[in-house]
Length: 450
Image 1 (tube, rainbow, N blue to C red):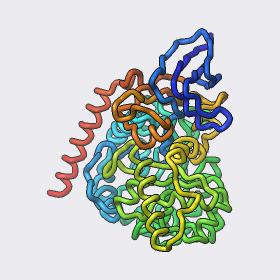
Image 2 (image 1 turned 45 degrees about the vertical axis):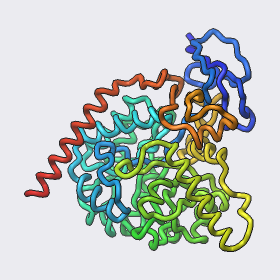
Image 3 (image 1 turned 90 degrees about the vertical axis):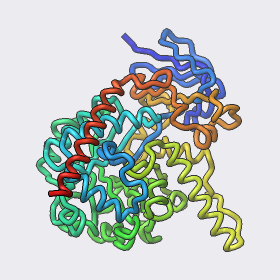
Image 4 (image 1 turned 30 degrees about the vertical axis):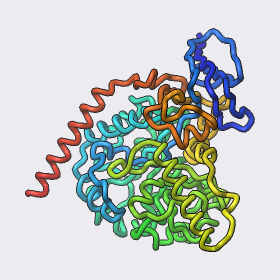
């Protein structure tokens, strides 16, 4: 029997040029798939009244260290240099599989609550083989669409981040691939979260790239951010090793040289930018326009909730404000007009949705309200005083709305948030992540006094 849901009479911003925007439109979902998007649809279906709502594709977060939800806000004033010491050398070695489970459960539900329907979970907390199992279990229980990016352990800053000679364990990556990701068609898919050149010796870099390609999974790596990586010429090093390819996402990219931008573009690579973190923690200016000018389709990510908020509205505004401020200042100084590539409010919504799906390798499944794609849909309350009255629906989403306006969230056709409340057991998730916080703080205290 076909399962149908009809979203009726919403202001649909599809992010599909062929579908366009419908000031009053319906979205029909059948068996988890978008069946039709039209001004009016008649169907035997559960009807959700979208009157006064803006209906958009779910946001896509292309890089979040979800395991850090247990230590939210512990480093509010941190620089990137501080982060390595305060988080990776202090808290990360203390994490048990139970802490990872609690953080991934709460962190993924936080995403859904904020209208993020697809998450790239950059999980560099695999201190034992039980750690990745715990992370994946939690993601699966929430119902989010996620790419689980298997990363290194983090039991020693010196061992894992300073010319590391320790590669991600290939046998365990193969185990995880076979156990959870035998198919690439599920709600959860897999990637490899690598540290890359500058942080690892060349033998480790080439071994990790080879492992990902052996298993047919994409690669995601931080490059060209702040003092630690800005001078490494990481993309150039990867090019010299013959490792560049379309299967790789480059995160941050704040200090790429012009040559490296061309190398990323020419190789078919993709880009993830975390603008709030980058401006706040000293990575560098978020290079959204740089990416666009090189023919790339940049995406947005949250990165770390130890230091910044975990919602996409923040990232959209951080990128929009920072990039326009930078370009306006440069053009004023040079006494030239602003370029045609100047960011617009609508472009920011594209970057946060369909571009994100492209970067996560999931554009064929999600990112736009396109008939045939999976039904990852978000409805925002546009009658609220912080949004109404609506003149430009895309601008209302990117410049006015916030998490409080996220009323309905659907992933793969399943309602995960209804009438402004998650359908999950939020009290349990909060209890577990608070218990994890207390356990980690106690372990930190015990370690410091030992």
